Image (cartoon, rainbow over all chains, first blue to last red; front, top):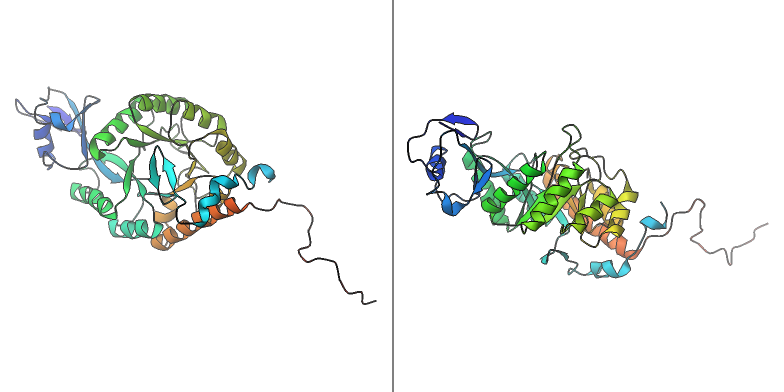
Amino acid sequence: MILLNGQHTEIGPGETVATALGRLGLEVHARGVAVAVDGEVVPRAAWETFALAQDARVEVLTAMQGG
Amino acid sequence: MGDSLSGLPLAQASGAEGEEDSLTIAGRTLRSRLLLGTGGFPSLELMADAIAASGSELVTVALRRVGVGADAGHRSSLIDVLAEAGVQLLPNTAGCFTARDAVLTAKLAREAFATDWIKLEVIGDEDTLLPDAPELLRAAEELVDEGFVVLPYTTDDPVLARRLVDVGCAAVMPLGSPIGSGMGIRNPYNIALIRRAVDVPVVLDAGVGTASDAALAMELGCDAVMAASAISRAQDPVAMAAAMRAAVRAGRLARGAGRIPRRTYATASTPEQGLAEFT
């Protein structure tokens, strides 16, 4: 179980940031997206290798209109 | 208002007559002195039209969770629309209440948008959305150390503005009045003092309600104006974008022209010499 953008989400063994992105309907190379795990930035280059631990807090952010 | 708010420095604004009156922030040259916020537009189409009408080259975007509120497809198209408009993105840290959150948001924005420019907002109060000065200064210092080009949204306090520049901010963005209030510039004396207190661009941010507010900001010596709600929530955003563009230019020209001093009594504009005596 991880917290993916505030939603409790069951994950299987070996899931990475990249597979979590897939759960949100995003491609691995999605433009304008950034990821933080447990309050630390995970660089784009590490998305496919960064393994998610149980109870990880994953924030997947993108552009929104704002002042 | 006395001399402290009028005219000067002429040299600084002398290029205002030509089209080459560009603004430079952190070594990057911008032809437009109007920054645009993308929040509040009812549609991306209107936003794109307003950007074109404004002439702005630097527009803000926020970072929010994928898949919350509007659908993800809509948001990725925001990036596409802005890319098509040919503008530079200025990500903000809107919604952050601590230096820690603002720094992390800035780092995420750098990752998402491949820019190290950040409009730093650290809010201290939900009702007024006024900046939290100690947290703002702390975040600014840390982000400068991390190599960011930091443009902090700050109060209209000349001392805080100077402190922000001392830690390395590339510009300061003092508020005219609270965000989205449309109250204009409530303390023009402080805005003029900030212009004198720092040697980086001063961008009037927040509070602009209509074109005259933008013109006043430029007359006070600001180097640029940021408008968001004033344009996006106007009844006709595209027309207001054009109005803001003209106002920024008019204010800039007036600043360079050097206004007359204010007087209590009249000064005749027609000479008395040669006046007829009828009785």
